[in-house]
Amino acid sequence: EIVPCINLVSEDMDITIGEGTSTNYYIPYAQYYNNGWVEMIYPASNFATAGYINSIAWYVETAATRNTQYSSLKIYIGTKAASTHSSANDWLPEQDLTLVYESNSGTVGMTTGWEIYELNEPFYYNGEDDLVIVTARKGAWGFAYYQYTPTAGAVLYRGDDSAPEYGEYPGSNSGTLFGNLPNIKIDFTGYACNDATCKAPKNVVAEAEAHTVHVSWLPVEGVSNYEVAVKEADNTVM
Image (cartoon, rainbow, N blue to C red; front, side):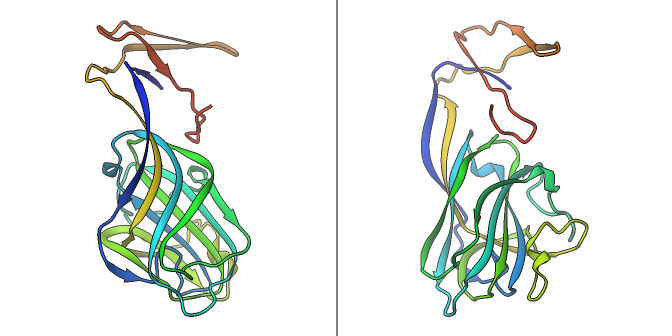
């Protein structure tokens, strides 16, 4: 990725997605069951730029009244070029998901307010594709109520009380489409040009050798420097 830019700047911000005040216990963990996999899509239109996701949080309106102890909680992040699920087995491919949080002991929904998860490492988000966040939980069911915003097709989940594999990647198994997207707050470090003359490069050419890639492009009028980012196939910046 090549970004020609004058005065590339970073900005730390909280991005809150969703304004609904209704509540539900199915999301974001499929709490009706002991084990669950929940895939949620947040539209790219909520982000003004690319950047790094540092933490995420969902809002607990009503805390659980029983112990929601889990034996495993994993959170994955990925991206896709669609803001809704097209069918009951339209899971994001497993290879497109990045594990960003993992815990083998804890509870969910036991206190009201924002339930925050600091990511193991910041996740680089390209600012263009829609954002996919997945929770995979194994443990005790519970009824903590989280705020959501009605969003048709944005959530796909599956759960079961006795089968732990329901807290793992579903593969070809079908789930249930759900129209209640939990409100989320994202601690985000965005990167953008603070100059209106920031322009895209033209005629970008790349030539690869055994251990070297030569990249060239035509000069852009008014641009004095370029920011070059090299990323892995999983969207991680090297």
